Each structure stands twice: as structure tokens, then as C-alpha cells.
Image (cartoon, rainbow, N blue to C red; front, side, top):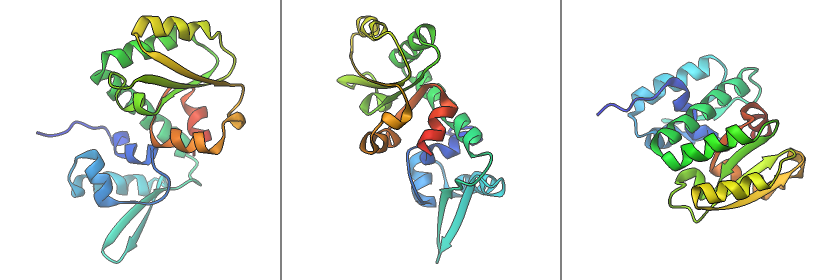
Length: 185
């Protein structure tokens, strides 16, 4: 069976990883053959989005943080990631739809176990940057039947480094994609 993935989907492993990633690890995470993955990663390298290093016979890729296109390309990859996850999970789709309808002018992401599987997660960890009415999240808890662990801060600088590292590992960006990507990169 052929796995349907757009070119931005090939960047998914870089959304959750800092540093260099071996080609075999990228292929494994995407569940796609090396030659197919290499083709798309080389295209991103030619655009200056990725940096490729060969160490002997091993090929490693990393994000080029100096690329003027990096934020836009990663934002597209983040949006595609959220879209694909919503297609798989109705509860996630309802949660995202609720937040889009009821929250504006803030940056929101889900992190931790709920970003991997919202149904199996005991609670939903949500980071909101900006001013909000916390009652919205009490209503969300009732709607979806899950406890929400809300972290609400006025600016990105208020988030400590250990939480930021945890967020980098597992997250889904709901609102404010470009601003959050800039902060994570």
C-alpha cells in the first residue's frame, strides 16, 4: 500500500526534533522507503530548508535555521500535521473546531500525550499565549469529557525552557502557527 503524503509531510520528523536526524530514522518515522524520502529531503536541501551532512556512508539532515523560507515551510508542515491528525480523530477535530470558534487573537497548542492520541490521554495539556476567558476551557471540558490542563501566559518569554523542550517533542499547533513556529525554532 502506498502512503499518501505531501512534500511538507516529509518535514514532520523535524517538527519534533532538534539537531541532525539520520536518513534511516526519518524513513522509519515516516514509514516510507529511503529512496523516496531522500528525493524529497534533497529537494528541501536545494531550497536551503535542510542541511545535509554525510559522515562516511551515513546521511544526516538538519534544519537550516538561517533559511529565509524556514518559518513559512515549517508552518505549512505544522498545518498539514494538524490536518492529518484531525482526519484520524473526531475528538481532536471537535476540540480544534471549538477552539477556532471561541478563541481569537492568541496562540494555542496542544502538547504531551493528547497531541499523540487525544482519546487515550488522561487529560489535554494546552498552552495559550495571550489573554483569554478561562471559562471557555471549562465549557470545552464538558463538551469533550476530558480534563484540560491549561497553561496561560501573556507572552512566549514566560514559558520556561523545560516546558518548551517538552512541547517540542510532542505538539499540535491550533492557532498562531507562524508565531509558534518562530518561537520553537
